[in-house]
Length: 375
Image (tube, rainbow, N blue to C red; front, side):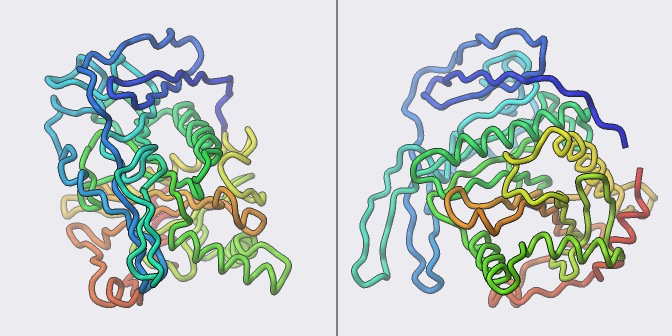
């Protein structure tokens, strides 16, 4: 497996008309970024509030302003294409870009919030400002592309971007967890088809991350070992669900996969987050991750024999910013709701009502299919 050579990349921070930050991530030889946002100066949108869900002791962000966010515009109105490529002003003032990050115009969490910090003595109706940050990560200026179509060198640039933003956002006072993810496909709920992902910086540890942390802590207290490392070792030893394995990473379908198509990608070395990956690990990750995404788009085949473009969620499960880092272990969770061409996995009564998951696809069968569609 070949890996790309790597030199330093450049991060350039500038401001949009409403004061939001935009960061250009450029490979060597790219001209300086100097374009100004031509849109009129206007107040930036503030986030809403967090409401305490006393039933499960969790928090819910109420962000009513997001009802009015841009929804599936035509290509010539895409706000993620470079400036000058469409009929409406772009979020990105430059006429071209490689990778770009900017604060979401319609944030669930932001640096300013209309929410109030009102604890409830009864423990029922407490609220907090939804302080944090939501960023959009555009992987390419090419509207028609997809993550799997990026050159390996560009995938490596995105990985470095995720790591840099994880470190920067995790250092913000009050941020408890940083989550990098990509939603792809209208079946997932994507509102902009341009290739992009997001990064959320939460002011609390979200429920699933909290559950992962608690399980990891219990395992460590019982065995003295990291749960993520023991799972990876067991899957590699069993082998029936391993999809691809390299020097630094292994991808496998988990033994108790919940989704019709689900793959976990884990480093062989114990690291808490993307920041901790070294250059060799990032190089191989760029190759294997791109390989996996290509397999997903060959997993299902239509009646005419053509491959089916798979909707998916790619979720980086990292250690929280301030707690549990000694027992947490990085892994990527790739999952799809498409259980067959034209057939979706709905989170209906059992899953949505009580969290009782049912998977119609045997994990071993899914892994075998993913091995079969290797490039």
